[in-house]
Image (tube, rainbow, N blue to C red):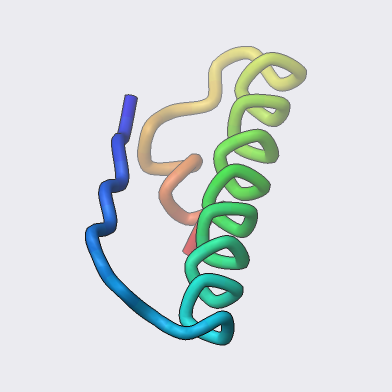
Length: 52
């Protein structure tokens, strides 16, 4: 599991950018998990190519 920690006193635009980055990361993780579950025999290299 990846943990992202941000400590800042920023503007609303910075907070929005952080939230967008977190949502994007979760979306990519879920897509890879779904591919791994649906297509048995998928290797780590296949998942890395899928995400890149």
